[in-house]
Length: 229
Length: 229
DNA sequence: TCAGTGAGTGAACAAGTGTGCACATATGGT
DNA sequence: ACCATATGTGCACACTTGTTCACTCACTGA
Image 1: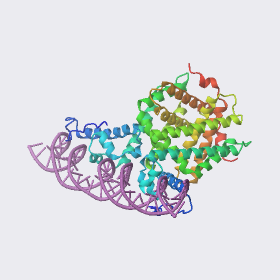
Image 2: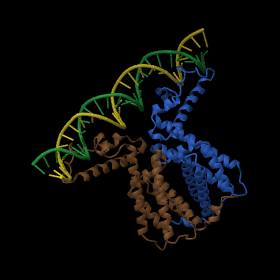
Image 3: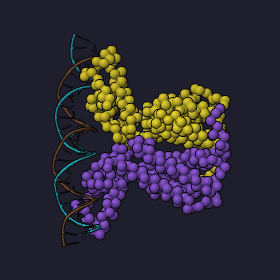
Image 4: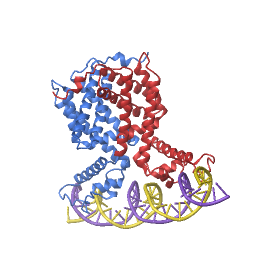
């Protein structure tokens, strides 16, 4: 058991010159961090108790209420954090520009690196997407929806399949994003001492993304938009 | 609160001629059913308490131990049930044969019908796939893995892309299955009074599956098997 | 027929939970 | 310099939880 030591029994002792608002945000982050950490160790969010979180954060249970009304609110804050990470990822890929050769492998590499850099965020996103409370699920759907739309817009900006309507582009992107998230979950669940398996999963992931874009390259609107017959 | 009425206070009263083993299996099913029902109403499995389940099943908490060692064991039984449903689905699609026109739309229709017939199983599968305890996640991965392999074999039997190695076929199928499960989760989460949204989601789903097979039709092993360069 | 088995009951427990309340005290504006 | 504010503490409360124990009594099979 970690049993992180409690904060000094009076506020402000730890960072005397820190400023009040700063301190508040600090313990708020500690609470969020504690939740993420606990979730990384088998726990799933809905089975997380308020007391557990405050214990891990090194804070008395009642202090929780200074920051969140209840666990649901903390959950939403967590989702927001994950969404932020996702957006940062998109920025990163965008910044990398459009390499002339093997765009897919390149982007996937950046993605996997990002997943490994923020395992807790991706695990949370993947696990609460279908698992959490209805409220939280909806929140995650929104974030993922944003991500899909941004990605579609990015594709448009680099001139990819500029003949397709936005609907079609977004449908393609959502397929890609689903595959991404599933892969993240699979890869993060792997025992860390099996580089061979990891390699296989990664190759499988790249193949799937490639296959999707192979299909996307030939997609025709009529095939999808035709609701009759 | 449902507060289903308790069983008669002595065993065997309810179905006097039922036989002992039959009665045991009956309450066992009641427990599994109770868990599924609770999960359908917002709860996620790891946040389910033993007492909650027995309450919903109309049984005293201690009776639980006559059937499962703990909640984890019940979870595994649940996963097995879901796996059974998945296999039944495959059989159903297989039985329907290979229609000459629009195979995809046809199969998707059967699938969606199945999802709506067993919403709790599909919701459970989708939600515990990434969310539950490590043990349960692994169990679900196994079931899904079986499903993927069976599906690949089915494709092989109808002569689909008989030139591809099994690896490639399975990689395609796992993409399809992921898309299926995501779609199920999305569709089941929809408010039931929005047929328009449902319709849109379904069309989107069909498009995605179509796109995948469009890509699959052009897949070449070299592209995926080439680990160098 | 009659003992034994085993699915169910109810009471009890220690531990953990969420939350309300009164209290401390550093911070920050006046 | 000082008082209100706000962040964190400690204690207390009523509940719920998982699990134990001794029990009942219908069904089973010899």
